[in-house]
Length: 210
Image (cartoon, rainbow, N blue to C red; front, side, top):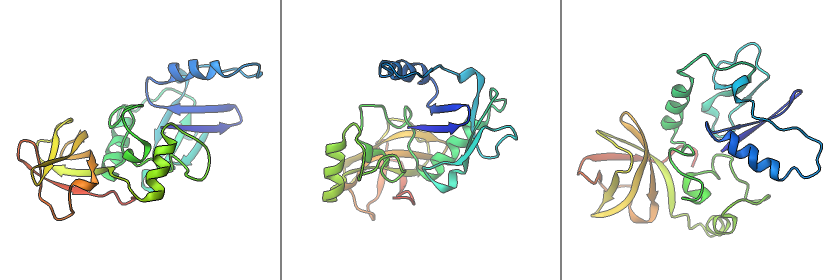
């Protein structure tokens, strides 16, 4: 997941922490003869969610979900260490998977982690990794995997979830009693009792944006 900020100072690309250097290297491979300059400015700017500083270069609503609120870019390093924790809590509350925590680049298809419902892909234009498979699943209505919300006690990342003696999914991120899990929708019904592999009961909830 990335966000592109268009400002009077140029185009800023907001990516997951630690991904800037790799993305910059890849973009430079495709610059060819274009007369543009690209550099990593992570140390000079901060990105946040919620109330924006007065000197923000840009403020816009997070396109993934209206309840995430505004996302902003400001010309100074962040001085609020809790900013990331606040955003992660909102994502977990809404059941929004996060790259590198809930999935890796080549481990899932976009529909598995709800990117189509989070304005991450468009089935009517453009191309992306896994497009042919994602398009076929979408048009046939055969989406077998989705990321849902989970509530329960003593949850840990990587724990399997079971229903009727069958594994139906795995917890991909946990925050307190809340979690996100990648589920096989074709392996359980809404009324089924679901437990962790240790036998502890959990509650599954489909995110409101699906």
